[in-house]
Length: 134
Image 1 (tube, rainbow, N blue to C red):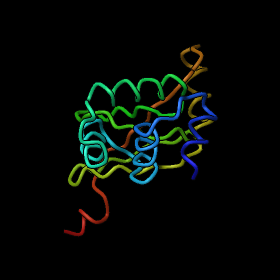
Image 2: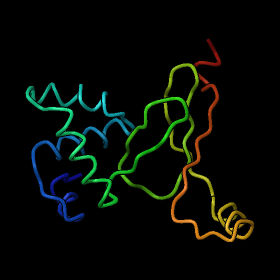
Image 3: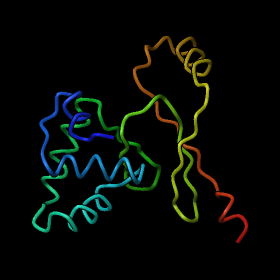
Image 4: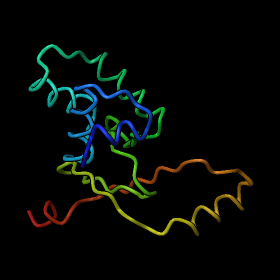
């Protein structure tokens, strides 16, 4: 993946910090701000949390990055993908994408509420197979 070109495609200025953020999100999938900060400190020892928040907000505004709100946990961030749900393991805190056909569910919700749905967030909590075996 060419991170610089991807940023340009979303009309985002290409900076070394933004390229590093995109690279970490691409490799790790889901990171909270603290995890991202710790990873970026290795490459940019003088980077501040304010810089990370500023860059994340710019990328969220362009719908390049999405915030995933996990109940009772810090929000995590991921590169924008097709609509999907998340599974969070209650033991190891691993987060996995779950690709479901949500069209029928969204249609039902829209019909019952008469709302126009602009975005969704669906998080399943449970225990992953690795933790269940222990």
